[in-house]
Image (cartoon, rainbow, N blue to C red; front, side, top):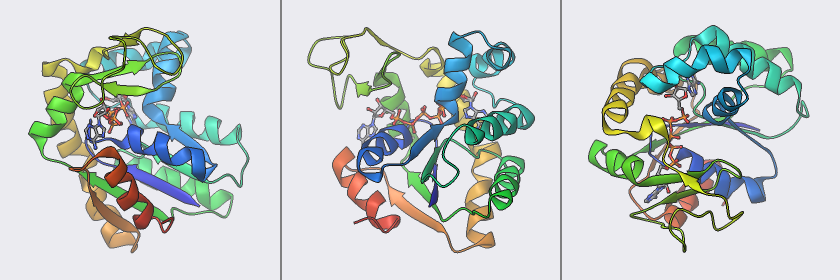
Length: 216
Ligand code: AP5
């Protein structure tokens, strides 16, 4: 099975993917996480991607598709896959179809998470993440027991540099201008798109997510 988690910055894609993956038993592929790792390790990709990410712009499609091809080459070709934050443009969606076709696979479901902009801005301004294990917290909705400390591994929590108010507003505009068209793309190309309201608790959204992909 190949699932895509689609939705604006801060809607909860990473949170929902992490919660599902324990029981799903597949691969959670977040292009944002892979890019941040490349930036931390100062790889060739990281050095090219850093400025786009700092500015809240999309990293060029060619770099993203190379990253995806490399990553898919390193995992079990039959693994169940949850794509989080990919694809983000029509060329990326087309590129993904080609890559999957080569291994006789296809996108099974696209889940669109939805929430109003004021909620996205609050979620992103309150987000704190563990750079070590990736666990996501929120100072408003799900604070860690000890301030700025990861409950899972004890590392210091960070506020992502692209979660500052100006960059968040830019990322939301980029989503509307370059990514939102994927909703139409997936609605018209196949009957795979499911909508899930993200305006509920994490557990309630998880239940709706599972129902949308037939895992309830
Ligand atoms: P990426 O890391 O993918 O960022 P994003 O899509 O902007 O998504 P976020 O990670 O900000 O949000 P999310 O939906 O995962 O929310 P989360 O679960 O954390 O990309 C970063 C950058 O990398 C891009 O700007 C671009 O430069 C580049 N990039 C990445 N992929 C690319 C691609 N394919 N093409 C080109 N460039 C690419 O939740 C947010 C907060 O809300 C958390 O604090 C969480 O605790 C809280 N929360 C979650 N759910 C709930 C709930 N139900 N109620 C209350 N709080 C909640």
